Image 1 (cartoon, helix red, strand yellow):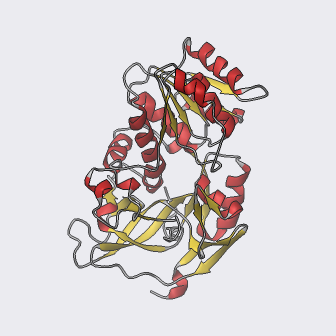
Image 2 (cartoon, helix red, strand yellow):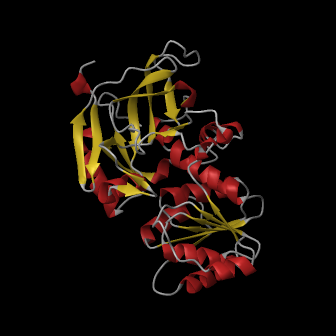
Length: 354
């Protein structure tokens, strides 16, 4: 394969996003070479483009973006047994490098040595060809599209968050933010048994989409205090929620999450915002509101694929825009404007179908 065949989306510094030709990688013994089909643009990618970093991750060198992706196996390493050329796969981007205590206890997402596609210093998959650990590539059933395969990554974020939150049958849930993560968290919470879910956002169009995919109540965030928003949540549900899933990263919503969550309940922080925010810690303390972090995912890909294959969860309505890889800059601009939900890059010029 010639070098010019591997067109890639590369961030060099804040505001400096380029399309470049890079070499096609050689898969290692336990890797596969993938022909990438679909890559979702995430809020993290936008932060790297606009700010040069996010959540403590900064750019030490030019970086190929992209961590929500699916594709086709082109070639397998000598040690790979369970995959073959032609297999369609969804890819888990986070791969532990060492068998440390976090890996041994099943929380490999917390391993400090973990490889993670599209997070410094590891290149991502906004490109034509990409090599990845075969153990973290999962076959897609025939009933699932490549775009659904790429959406397994944000769906996994939601599954991990709802697990950490303890969402169960009869739960009342408040979700802050109706972007992709908020909307898949809504669907996962309902699938896990939540009785009622209320979701808030600044955008009325995103809240319309939330109603479409199963929200019981929606709240448009406007003027007012975090306490005002918490009061609206309680009025909508008829009681304070058992769980709040904060997906925006905004200080206002973190504060509202504390005030809204019932005493003894759980506030899960999913959105990556500023390094520090002010929170009403005394309110959380005296009411025993558990504030928990949720970082990426672990052991979620098989569950997410099963949920999509069974049609218990439908992510298709969330993909609102599609661009060829060559139009990546336009795709990033579209995502920044917030005019849709999930913007998808189609990387295989010979297969731009879903």
